[in-house]
Length: 282
Image (cartoon, rainbow, N blue to C red; front, side, top):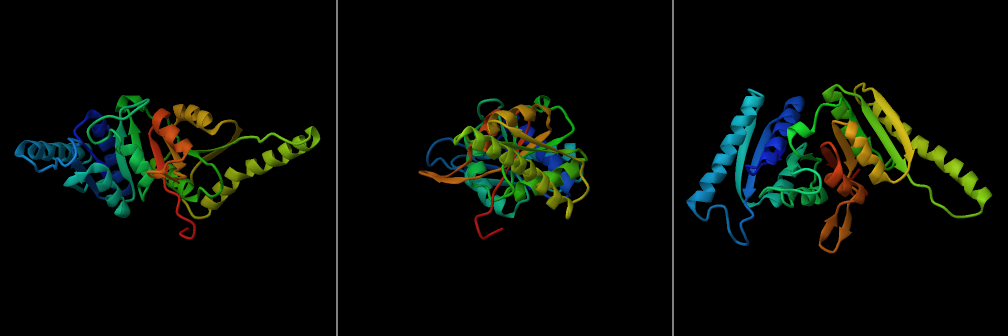
């Protein structure tokens, strides 16, 4: 498991979440401090002061991890490369990558100013983005899965396992939007048929998970509406929300799907974005 830190209070909150996640899984935690955003070409080792400051950030983070979970296996990495690219590379061998953000509406810190969105669009492993301070995330006793379709198998499996590790129920929330058009009679019949089919999406996803995962209390909800609005509202009662990334190519590289992007900015709990394998790699 990998967590990015930069010495800010918000990366400290991410560290606390990462320590808890590593402890639940019984895995080693790697604490990474990438190159500061001090300007183009300004490497971490260009002078003793930035280098020593970065070393101190890692020492303090490791000490905090030991304080939170004595005996947890922890390693630190000070890397003379931009934090975002470092965390993407580390993600190839990680079960989870963790970063923090300022809270509603933006990101902050030398590490976190733009890293969370870039990671969400490129991370090869699930990404946990912790928003705001620890006080902003009281325990609510459930994990929320935002399920777009039956193809979100990796996100569903992650949410199911996470609820089991935490010992809390899982709420599977599927949101769909009615498409208008056609004659009134056909539209009514089509709506009824569509509604019945949409009801089956989360039911079938949960049925598949229950055959090969630990027993988890599961609530299933199917709602017609705008996915971003419904999911953001539902995060008010969740400890964690899990969604699939649904990336697509853009002019400057891969772009994150709209639902995940909105949740990263406005969710009222930490967000896990799970990558969707390319066709043929499932």
